[in-house]
Image (cartoon, one colour):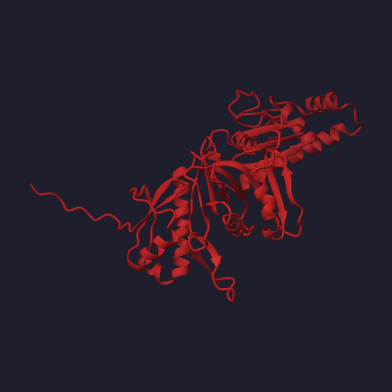
Length: 361
């Protein structure tokens, strides 16, 4: 019996464990040797669940190629875990007992420098992406670090193995224990407790595929509470605050703030398919969380924090209401005001412009 010849599969010369996902890198020869060294802490014998694309023409510019490989491996792992994990644009280190400290921030906020300093005393988990499961377990991504290798050419960065930098080795398992949001600039105030509503907004901006999670705002709120609250680090040079940040691991947690969840699937009469004749209504929302006098609302994949009159109006629109009914509700809550009608009209205009409510049909 004869059989049709089968086309050879892609060559997978290097397989690395990224966020718990074995990702194949189809390279051989010198490129494979170099990448195995750079990815020394992530090499795995597991078969690749995902593989990245590599063009033979790319390998000639080693620095650009290595950086591109790192980016593609990370994206492949993020795609594989989308909707299953809380994936943050963050770096992380961990103590021997598994307590992990995560630093969240955009590109240019100094994450790699900060993590490299912290990992001289703690174990290196990642300088770029932190992937958390339901129990806040951290799935490591010990990728090469992109650092300046020649002080004379500060814009030229190379991919350096954490072994070459002498970074500490992470424990076998780690869980999120403290969360810091990096605010790099002229303000050098150091660590400041961050209200959860504000922390949620900042973390959403530095997350991946968050909207694919069930109740994403609540997921973030739960994570922030579970790791003892969130802190903002206002700094110029991270080295000046190294001990302060390390002290968070053994410092006291913030008490969880009182909150009220407003899920999108809560059977709310305010969730309607389109504009309502003669009445204002909520735009369909993804998830929302109420904190005292602030309200975090996610519509689509965007979040906003409401305060004051905006909170009252959004909550009153649990059912569609006329503008007159909303004025009456605000008056009942806050008392008479000569400009109440104008203030409500102005606030509704702002909420409508933000895409949070819809005007009458």
